[in-house]
Length: 238
Image (tube, rainbow, N blue to C red; front, side, top):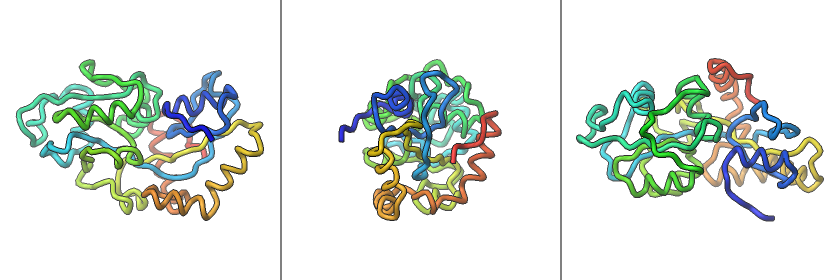
C-alpha cells in the first residue's frame, strides 16, 4: 500500500485517471472531465472547523462573524472580543479544494464565494495548518480529523464546540461526509478494501480515531442535503 497526500481534488482526479486505486475526498465530484468515471462511497462524518493559534484568547465566533472575517468586513480581533491585532486569514488556493469548497457551501451557501483578497493562500491543508501553529493572529478553515493532531486552537461556533458528541448529534453546525473514491470498474482489491472500511471492524477503527462512523451519523444526511441545495448543488452522494 502506497499512501500519499494531496487533498480531495487529487483523491478524485488520480482515481479517475487510473493512477490510484482508492482516493479520499471530503467533497462531491464536480462536472469536469477529469472527475468522471468514479463512484463516491461515504464512510464517515467529519467536522469543518475554524482554527487559530493556541495563544489567541478568542474562543467562540458566530457564523455571521466568520462570514465577515473571511470576506474582509471584520479585519481586527478586537471586533470579535480579542486584542487589537489584525486578523490574518489563511485559506486554500482556488475554490474546489475539499476544505475551500465545503467552507463556501456550508458557511456561505455559495460555492463561488470570494474570500478577502488579503488572504494568504496555500496549496494544501498540511502547510496551512502548520502556519496556524506558528502565527498568533491567524485563522483558517480545516477538517477536524487532521487538526486534532495539530497544536492549534479549535474555535467554537455559536457557542458549540466540535466535540465528537456534537458532531454525531448534529448540534455542531458544520459537518460533512467523508468519502472513499473508486473507479466504476474498480480492481477487486480496491472493492475489498472499501468493503472492509464499511464493515463493523472498519467502522470501529474509524471511531477509535475520534471520527463519527457512517451509521452513527446517518440522521445527518437530511440537513446536509438541505445545505447543499441552499448552495444550488445537487443532493449529496449517499
